[in-house]
Image (cartoon, rainbow, N blue to C red; front, side):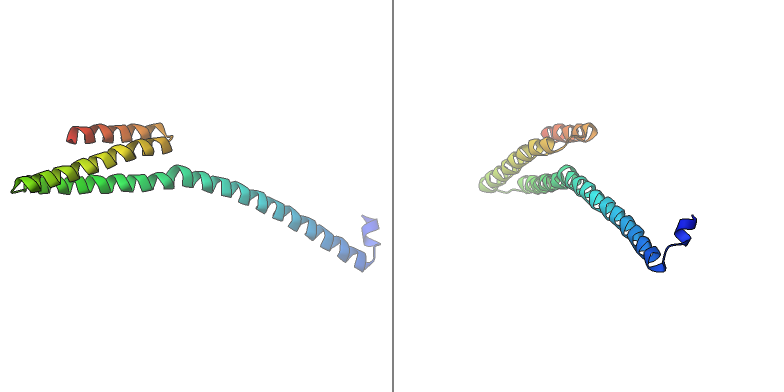
Length: 127
């Protein structure tokens, strides 16, 4: 350790700055690799969780509109209203039947797929 004490102050300062620069470079490298990992995780999160939420929203919208159309069908007073509301119900039915397979294709978790299947079965019973 005596050799270090014998060095000039300027050399000691340069060695200290070099050591700090090496530490900063290591921290920077770790930060960049962590950002890449976070980006990959974020992409996976978006693909698996956020995109299917849009389909769930479309299914919920179609289902709620179908419920309203059923109510209007019940309260229809003439044949033309009855026919119009029945056509609207069938349109909503086809929307739901279109969106459910799309939702199933986006989801990989088995317990979620089971719940979607239960919903689809109950929705078919509702028809």
